Structures are given as structure tokens and as C-alpha cells.
Length: 76
Image (cartoon, rainbow, N blue to C red; front, side):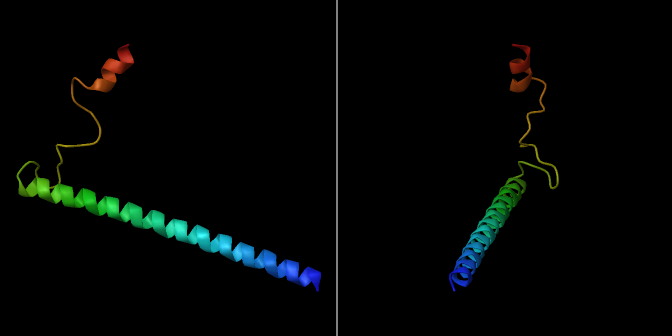
């Protein structure tokens, strides 16, 4: 009987761990979706205010200008 109870306990713990991992995965997907929707909303607002052209964003996350800070950091 002890072995059966131990096996059941281990199975229950594995089920709990699996449920926790699935919950974390769902939370991560929701977080990513919210971030994507927020970025899209910002882009739409920028287009409406005529700060950007549709499909072309001036405000990019990478600093690709002639005088970028990353190039100055690399020289030092």
C-alpha cells in the first residue's frame, strides 16, 4: 500500500508542476500579446498624428542615426 500511495503522491506532484508550467506559459503569452497590442496602438496613434507614415516608423528601437551613442561607446 505504501508504494501505491507514494506513486500517487508523485503523480499528483507532477500534475501540479505541469499545471504551474502551463500557467506560466499562458501568462507569458498574454504578456507578449499585450506588449504587441500596445506597440500597435502606439504606431496607430503616431500615424494619426502624422508623426509617422503608415508602415514606416521613424521612432525605431535601434539607433541607426549617423551620430548614434553606440558608436561613441565603441570608440572609447
